[in-house]
Length: 386
Image (cartoon, rainbow, N blue to C red):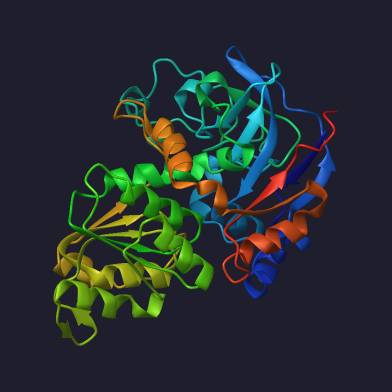
């Protein structure tokens, strides 16, 4: 079968890091990722099925991998060679469509009894992601045994699959996984009257939509967006105020009546969701959150350098939000399906590419905002099922 494969190669990883720093998304031209003919993954055990990806998204963590920017933290949680792709709508042998929940926790790994986190429904915090019947891998798309969405076949455990309703298109269904991340983040925000969302890529826009549709919607939903198309989408999805990133502090000061003391606001927003994860975005989030407030870090940060004095001095909570825990009744993906449908999130899918145009697809994804796009995906519906 055809698949994009990421090999372990330190020289190619270093080359991708150099090229990716100069031209984001272009690390694929020199890095360890290549298109190959490989054997389909084997079924690891009972409860596993084969899935034919139909559409598979490209996300920020994928781009970080391609450009050699991933943190060394992930080394024990990845196995090589792997096929990337964890935002997947696929098809089972009976023709039914499914969305993949990619986290490889105790259930898929055949670990019984499960770890304490999985037993409590917090599968995103699984303590056994390097153990069990699978090679290490925090998610499908980073595990040598499962394949991934950027290939003609992958294998998935039945607990990872969510049926796609007939009224939802593939183009909508491929947004369900990032929407589930946004739902999980939105539900971790304290019940406050004002929230700022930093960033208006796929995660930022999905988070705006999720916050705007909470049972107790914040009275003020403020967002930052770099590009005109992002600003228009942010407003249409529910943001009350949308500003450029460098206007955030002024907008927060105006909205909250805070004063400025040097480079620091005296007050700020009760909650901020950082959907970027860069050094600049985290520093900006900390500079506008109110004393005693909460910063939810949804964007993957990697290694960054920060002055954490305001975190200490203003007693701010910095909270990570990874994936989509089901400890609250197992409804995160159900809510994500509803969000995609109700908010019309299929409009965030801007372009699709076949696998053999992967270098072009990755470059487009890396430049999505500047080019007026949001989500870029691979379209495997025309691939032969060899």
